[in-house]
Image (tube, rainbow, N blue to C red):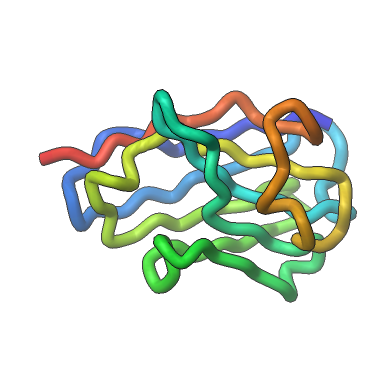
Length: 126
């Protein structure tokens, strides 16, 4: 299983982006997918998670009401819609899975475990 993120870029405060996490091989339909972000010098933090079926969602308090997550298993893709962006949302965004079908402890996944994509840069600046 390999994951690849895309969709990052430079956006003004208040703007939106749609980040994609695509499997380049295996189907994703058995796995929950989490989105994380990291700023240089800080620990990677989880922002959202979606179960394999899409029925269960989780969001960090810092992004609730601004970010949404969705998936299309037939397209082997999970999306993170990021709205009302703030400068503090600037980070490299990663998707990952721990091979479980539910979010559970996925938001606590460390970089040395599971499967991670290479990341996509989101920069929020005027």
